[in-house]
Length: 353
Image 1 (tube, rainbow, N blue to C red):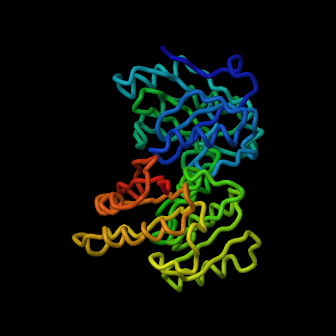
Image 2: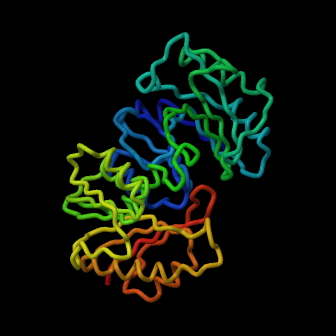
Image 3: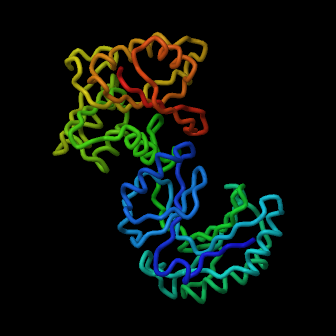
């Protein structure tokens, strides 16, 4: 059975589809409901959430998403049928809902679009004659033209492995990927989710003891309210670069070169939250047991955290880290399985006992 979005069902509300790093389904729902108070979830697949709201795109301040799209049409089909069969049903029965697009992007007759087909998140070749009906509807509703070589807007025609077909108008084009970042830097949306997992409060004193390029502190400064934020790293060059970037900051951000295993500068129970990405030891000596390093790190974290304090750690060296975790006085309250630049990793939320 095909179910399509239409103007009568959804009135003048906007329908968005937002992609995010798979593995954080519950966290993303919590972020959405906290930051978009009127949000109603239409469909939620791991890595993609579809929701409706009265808010225009410019008012959505959601740093946890990779990309945001406005939904033009959605259908549910049998996941076992071929892409071509599902596409034909979609084209023959579907009508697009373009309400509100003009409020989110600047549409002019000179502007152009191209439909990009995907199947299970991978690009796919199709006979474009099949989708001429959709192209004509888009041209009529939005007043823009089709252009295959140089176009202004991407319109994604995607079938998910769950069988859902989506026609999506892409609204974001400035999201960073690992290829755009310095080696070792984290994507902003991942840092945003790590910070949300920590449940930062306005009175919190926070530490990132392996700040590197400052990916986590930058996201906290941009999107969260806190008391004080300390960023440290053993690499003097990275610390100097970060200090230069935040030379005139008034965000209670304190940047200093520090050894994460020897944080004597801080008294016992000083921090409410630690959010950090320690070295994984996956790029040099893979055979070396790194659990001793993690034991020392966790021992120091335990000392400087308040009783009941939270520690959120991104970790790719799962075996060695969990060896170390067994010997420390932390309770693992949440664990998320994700991919970071194609590598398996876990996010641990620990509470000091």
